[in-house]
Length: 242
Image (cartoon, rainbow, N blue to C red):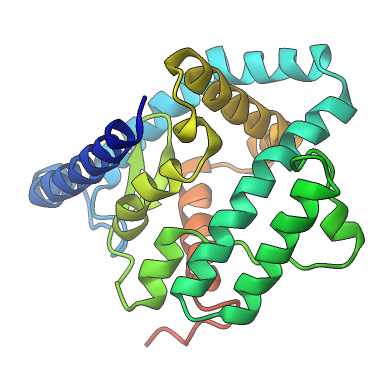
């Protein structure tokens, strides 16, 4: 996939997210079966997609991730995690600069430079050992800092729950991953699949605890996600809700 093709894909993903978000907003009144949570007017739709995602995870994604942890040594999985995190630090730095947080952006830039060189293209997290802080940011957070409201909560197939605002930022977040910048389609799919499976493998223990401890998993995941995203936009100091 060449550069023009990648840019075209980004635009297509953005327009698709916009169109689907607007469609969901238009259909919200027909999907309500009870008084909705203010931030979740699409709850009927969301619960259906959430159930689909849970089934897909239970029958396909989780077994693959579990097998991955058995086959791939821990030290290799850590290297894979660090490699993708290095790209994440680069994107975080860019978003920090877009938000006017130049100190945070500089710190993330130092992390990328350190881990790319001393850490052998990011396979080793030397920056953390040297005390260089990371400041995770994405384009959804940047839109929030710019003043865009979160909007309704939406659960997407496979991808999971996002606010409408974060859904608009998602195409650019995807474009910042290493798979997007590989010209060979086969390699691109392989790298994206590795990142997805590795990320799921890192959450196996947490998801097992969640399954055992929560009665209404959908509500817990939704509320925790919305609170976390609000906290991230305001750097841990969100204003009181009036």
